[in-house]
Image (tube, rainbow over all chains, first blue to last red):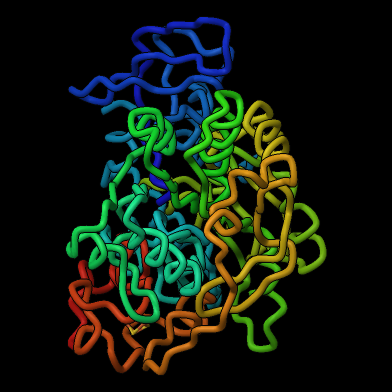
Length: 79
Length: 363
Ligand code: SF4
């Protein structure tokens, strides 16, 4: 139920109202998504989408941490 | 797909499992809160990959599973009325009420429509002004912003023919209830990542302090989950009890402020019943007075009544991590996804359904 899927913003239509919308690509599918809750989002960024709403902008830098975390811990331990 | 595939890499998951084996010196019991995490754990066989000292308990994190039976009965009642179009997320249709589910109302000709977003219900209301449109607004914090937006927009647009049957639950009070059980076994939590994208991580600090329990905000892919478990075990082994954020690519400490603002505009905190569990103080969101005109339970004059039925279902204990689904006598025999007794067998994120689909346990 809290399933939320990452997708890439490919266009934004902002009419200044609460109902800022945009197109988001998920793999091969493009959907209209409400962007009201990610006011700063830019085309090209990735968002997490839940029941038609983008709820978070994905942070590319943070996204890499899972791959370096164990090494960092090992380095800390070795110091 | 970016942000998905790389988090399913068997190699990286394996690295974490080996690292876990190195740091685990004694048995620990960790509960994942969210049904999406449960699904991922059972589907990918994560319990079998991690050291045998570690036990994963499945938590209450599936809004479909905890929506009270009474509310399903109300939904069934409303959906059966001739001038009503009843809109719901698809998962709710097979959840049993005391007598019927929404699916059987639909099968008998009731106008029950599955929508993917609450905003679709608004469109339907505009398209059919002569009908009463009702949306079943269920969810955790994750879904609250979407439901709040639909309700807010309905008022903005002065739509007279739409109302909302609300069952919004809040997670931290349920975690407190689990920790306060006299026979609680949970020593560490994986908190629900998407709930935290909205609410942030700060509201877990008091829980971690008060109960001296590590809480790791965790994502949903296999790699997220093994890293979350690793962070949790690392704290347990070191005697720490902190809130950590594994899912930092999506979760900020303060959460999503724009979403919180609209939730506060539309909802207030109320006591909430959890199916199979009972009432938990301050664990729900109800409509504020300024939005009460959109409350389906007053529009349709629903009276609250008790409806407990006799059933072998132990889904309440399953939701609170006291029992596992295969400890239920009905599991896989009289209770299956096609004829479920409890909501945990219906929802794709319910623990019983995940066990039924992915775990080959002999019934
Ligand atoms: S297997 Fe069925 S009857 Fe048993 S706890 Fe799960 S939902 Fe309830």
